[in-house]
Image 1 (cartoon, helix red, strand yellow):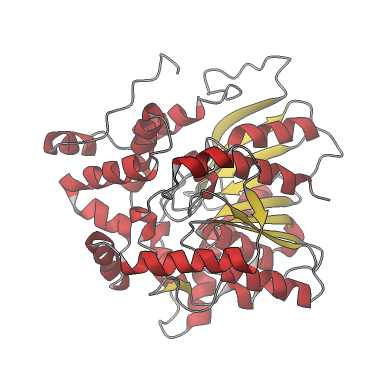
Image 2 (cartoon, one colour):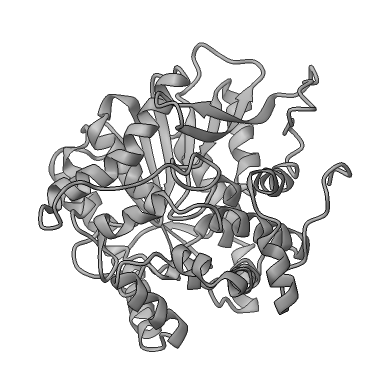
Length: 422
């Protein structure tokens, strides 16, 4: 770790620590918390370390990309080959889920950077407009409540049109989109609106795919826990590949676990669900609790990211606290896109067949996921019916909704495999 960066705060565990946390959030603290995660990458260069060694195959930097509206910008993490090739494959763009940020993927950046270096290409990770460290501009939908199609289109456009604006500013022709959860949903929505700009879609535990309610609620974004994997399972997973093409049996197994988990839903989760259905977002709730907000975030960070080292967990907590306590913006999209029950008002399974027939689309779920994999399975079938045989679906062993963190090694291997698929 760089000695010039102040040490991360301990996860708040008492009232006084919680109060103190509120006074240590803001743009400067947010930038520092993100940089702590990114400085774990040997190829990252901060603004004060812009010098690149001749032997570096790739260099990573962080910046704000100004969009067309004066007060709109996208926080961007760029990993570029130092020997770009005219024959390079289109760059990959990593897109986070609801209320998260690009820092969540710090364990996935090294193999993606290696891919960029070997192929003379680039990889970018973005914070969606209104989330993470991007501009927290006002979000509103003018469409009437009963006009579902207009409401959804307007809410989606806030995100996908800003992504298109970003692409134009970056002078990119085509992109491979790697999206997680709601970021995967927006990736498909973008590809439907701007099909000529998308090379491939890699969808990690995508939201909004199936018809009908999920077995879990969207409040899981703040109450989710890592999969409960036995020591024997962890040992055996190191002895063989743990990503597999999806089968009916594996999908049924995931759904059965989801049903069982639903019956054990905690009081806390039911409270989040109730408030969600009343029009609140989980992040609005955390901000409104003032003193207890940082404590809730600390509890979530230590529980959900227990697979990280103690130092990584502490830094992740600090990062999450800063982006969560920032001004509400893009988070308010959720009630326009998802109905109570966490299913989409306009499910992707009913729209995905409109994608170009040559587009590669990959669905990835954890074997302990709370997103319903039946939607991905049905989507692959829909693609095949219209002549697109490039749809695939994988199940990652020993992983939940945050598949890229729960079993990072196997997800990283799969990401590179799909990026290189012809």
